[in-house]
Image 1 (cartoon, helix red, strand yellow):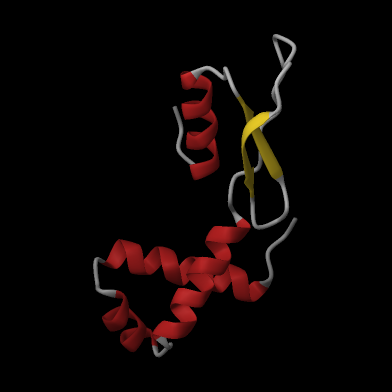
Image 2 (cartoon, helix red, strand yellow; image 1 turned 180 degrees about the vertical axis):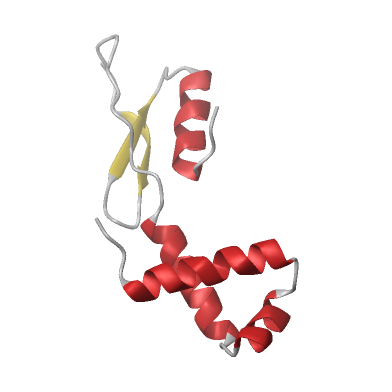
Length: 101
């Protein structure tokens, strides 16, 4: 999936701001852009690059209903069952947050 020219330009601005060490308000003033646009594009691009769910396999049959259900803004549903291993939950939540192990 290719980015639009606007998304590419904003991604570059956001990266330049981070590298500049300047506060966002000062960077935007220097670039001649509004801080509102900067924050809106930063949020939009972060949402667009949010990690997807990774494939999983069930090693034992699940006999209980879900203890927790998490629904992402895009409607994807994650069900966590009683008895799930703690490390598995940590790994899944880290992947959803975009962290690496």
